Image 1 (cartoon, one colour):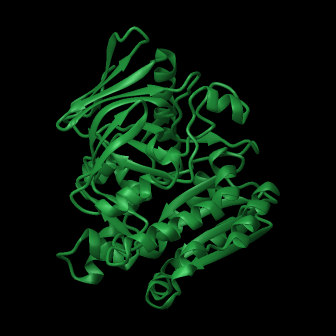
Image 2 (cartoon, rainbow, N blue to C red; image 1 turned 180 degrees about the vertical axis):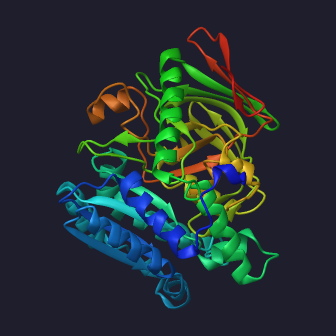
Length: 418
């Protein structure tokens, strides 16, 4: 974590820092434009941040802000008292309504922060069924997000249960404070001018994606402890990172924070073995020690030292759940990695290390806009899930391969090779 005083703004109280984060969410994350609606989701614990984001959204000209709150205690009551058949049900009407809002031009913001082990003691079969039902119901809205039809973003909140999981040795209030300090540092809230800092950061990510697009690699090879993996890249793939323009013409940062450049793999051209370098917090369950083997693009063996049943359920969601929809490169010198914190939250941990994602591909990661049929022909994967997990570290070497298999060093010691 950057604690150089010259790089930090004068001391701000917590209210001022949270206000800055809310402003970043609206101006940098969403790029919200006057007259645009906003649909926001949030845990109930994040009400103070949700209210600040609502304020900044209206100041930016939002026509309407609609917030949907979730409650983890209520989620657990479902597993305690809900009928078995109910775990195959989800609120399709809600997600259809969100999709209708997006088609009408609404932006999407999700405040993220939850107990990473919320469902770890629950029946993994019920967890998988509930996740599958929700994924199917959410598909109309997810397709519009994955297709960059709208501007959207994710921003963090220091949920108390999340803080306790990250800093188990600290008293509860101290854990929350330490997590907020990390969030504010990593999201650049603590710099003298956060918006300017994000503009510079986005420019650096743009330069890196341009370099990778010029090199036009046919595939990437990851090698290191427990890993020897070749990830073929989709035909006509394009690297992206940082700020991007949605199809509605609005520029924004889909993730606050973000440190990655990413593209679309070819769903049938991943081969070899890969080991996760960080645990995966998935739908309230922690999966650790992941090691899988790919053949012809699909996982044929999957192991985990913790959360094996949930891992197996996840990759059995549908045919595309065993194939890749994203590959991303992240240098180890980034602020999240430098913090030395295992966040147990994909928004942070995926940006601490290079990673892959099982499931749905992003259609925006191509050199042009293609039809669904053409995207599939070029290798894009389709699935109800999109789950990122980390495979990078300073011990993992990354090479770019041309079609003949000739290698160009891309990352060594966790850093870019220029």
